[in-house]
Length: 117
Image (tube, rainbow, N blue to C red):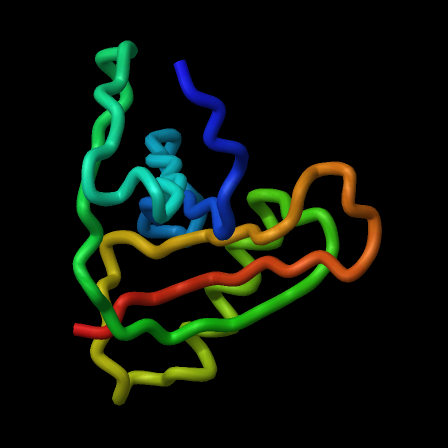
């Protein structure tokens, strides 16, 4: 019953298929604002879960514009190529993160995150 507003970044957990495309299952994560962190409200919708994300080290790349699935897939491929075979990171998922409201036309920030193993 309390409006919390939107937080940034909005993270989408992407699950890549063998060919690099994304599977149709996704998980959208929103940060709970600081004032609600100690005692988050209970969701009234069963499909919404409260999760605590542990600290992590990530490999990241940033790009602008209105990000679409194809953009995240392309930048994930570029990040994979830049890291080469030496870097150890999770291959079963990655995060697609956006920082801007839909109506912001310029200076948009999007990122792809690979979680270091």
